[in-house]
Length: 237
Image (cartoon, rainbow, N blue to C red):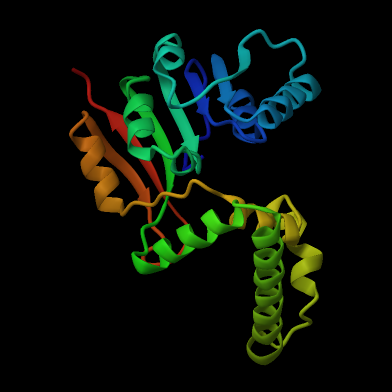
């Protein structure tokens, strides 16, 4: 996790646990307590399944449903040494509100790990419109899925054959092992990711600086599509 390999003695909060893999990693790194929550019932079930498989008797791994926008729920959690929310807050519909709320859960000198979609200006606005349309019904969803998948496959084949000079089917044979999901699942997951919000690295840094955080590490995608990755430390009051 961005250079952190040891969580012994620390409490870990996974905001939007998704598959639960990050929570599992925290357990394996020796976290004193791990608290995982997600708004999506399937994600909660998946995280619980990982606990059942790997830490069936762990009383220090708590998993529940919850929202990063629910003030009462968040207020009941207390504070944590590490608060981790990876590629989650930009799908809440109120990203800055959610970021502010989870920042309150970081203990003094604790760390906040977040990944936020990069603001590409006009391209981001186009993607927001596409994603909104995709989620409006089965007809636009089907049409956009076919169009997008066809474009991806054609583009990939041209790059592999003309530039990389390799078998174009290789990328699909190896895709699942490198991404943890099939090519089609990954593509449709991207199209369906709405609400969709973005931010520049400077906007995130400035927002959290006014709330008592200092930037410890940044991995930026520059002007590209993807998530900028941040580690912040909360200054002691």
